[in-house]
Length: 193
Image (cartoon, rainbow, N blue to C red):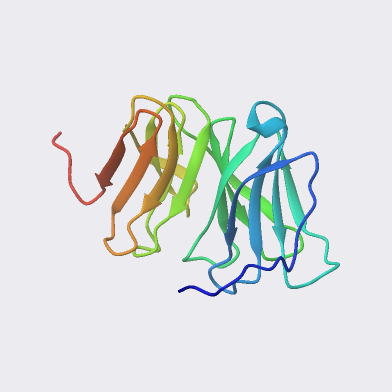
């Protein structure tokens, strides 16, 4: 039998915001990034919070955004780099995220519009593209180094809620959406011209 218990050791009060996603920094594990939105993400601003749960009394670093933020993912190739999914159809790349003053280094719009609900960096091909999923059912690949959209494909006939790279096979990304489907996409397969 499992005998573990959960005990709250830290918390962050953000009464005007509703948290949608959180992820620990994969390099040190002592930074936690949180994507949040006002009004349950229906309308209003968003805020990215980055704090160190083990250090009480430390004020979190924040970046305010004009629209809701729905997902966050740390790069496993570049320390202090993360991506956030925006309700305005953009993915924001953030640098210096483990420092006192993180900054948005690039905003990448996803073709076809719709909110971006999911973002993910690959764990196997750490230098590969960032995946993003939108409410119009598209999966997009973004080059995190140049901050440009590489490719986009319609994978769902409804909103897409999450994307995830395979932890064992480079180039394979999964997505799930409101159309009741789970889609597997393989970036290694060349499409006919």
